[in-house]
Length: 375
Image (spheres, helix red, strand yellow):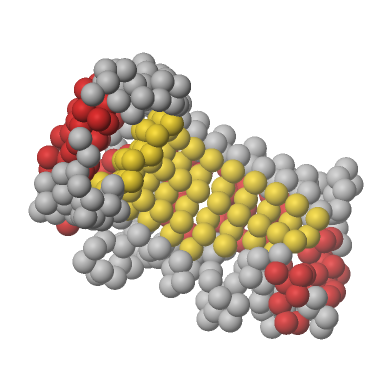
């Protein structure tokens, strides 16, 4: 067997290990890992006994001085789940140059992996997909880890239940965190939670005062009050909120006004707060758009789902929207509007949308979205 790397100029490698394959030889794997490699991904989509261990052992044994990105994806429970966690931790101990890390491991003892990741001195981006940690008899004990981990983290992307997200975020001690992307989902026991029970799911965000971007994918119901901690992030520039089919989020006009005052630098906002053209949930109306036009003075891009029908806007008068508002909006994307099939009947209301965002110092905003395309 040769002692030198087979592909000496390789910079990126992706291992995809399948069920039924013979486990790879760890020594052979080392020959596929020259010192030029900067990106490694290990994916085990099936139960592939022995395969992940061979690759991880090889990674832990070789020197990769330029390794900057590592991704591990094992979403299927393996027979030796805890042992895999230890092997991943050893890879992280060996390669201190990692700046971007993605972790998707179906196992109940992941605290060791998180602890090792948190001590990487150059880690700037972390993505973690949790698998119902809080249901596993109290393991892993994330809260037992030091609270000074991830000192230079810039981007945090988490998918899990509110409890698992809360636990992991409490261990992050970075003053540089600027991007948070959350996919909040119910626990594995499928016990339905109420919006009131989820009221503290974003409480941790107030710790990160320099936050620039917040992305929320909500598969759990929350109330508008749950966004209050985010109002402490005064430097927010981008906000994107999307909800699942049965998880509508209602934002009142007063809440929108508070958001506008709290985030004077906000330039991009996406509010998809319901799913379905004929939802029984309340839609945002034209009055809400007027509040956005008035309070979000530096908003450049807006994507919103709302109701532009007469029935959905009781008491709204088109002539009330003719006052000029000083704002910077350039792009308006109307998505999932209740007026999709009523465009011709309510074209005056569409004119009021344009009027609400018309500014004396900016061009007329560009309209996009399914409702206008249907016309």
